[in-house]
Amino acid sequence: MSNYAQHKVTFLPDGRSVSVRTGTTLLDASRRAGVSIRTRCGGVAGCLMCKVCVSDDQAASLHPPTTAESYKLGASLLDEGTRLSCQSRIKGDVTVTVPEDPLKAAIRKKLAEQQEDDWWK
Ligand code: FES
Image 1 (cartoon, rainbow, N blue to C red):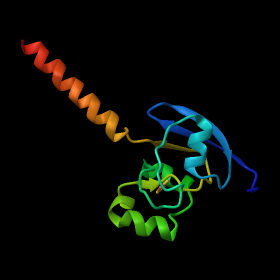
Image 2 (image 1 turned 60 degrees about the horizontal axis):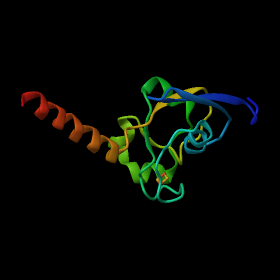
Image 3 (image 1 turned 135 degrees about the vertical axis):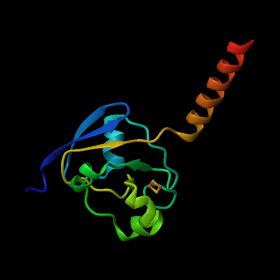
Image 4 (image 1 turned 30 degrees about the horizontal axis):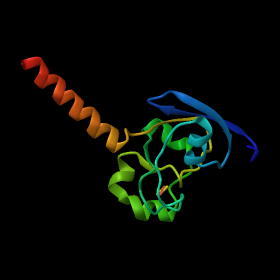
């Protein structure tokens, strides 16, 4: 396979996709696709904010975890399919899931609780 091969990367839950070259990181692909993945370390496996979920059947479309990624995530998260998007390099068509932003999740939960309270009044 050529180093210039293109691969389709799809980000769930948005369903946005982009075509990128072999070796592109998931983080770079997300930016090109217009998908927001928060980061703080600049993509050096320092902040752990760029986690994405990769199912077993999609894992072979990414290069294996780097030493830095393995060290930072640990065996348990890696076994669950968690990868750092800044370290994960693409080598085939792949679909990954971006977890909901923790702040958005907290707001959504609060709104749901308020709606439930209002319903009982
Ligand atoms: S961007 Fe900080 S760990 Fe990936």
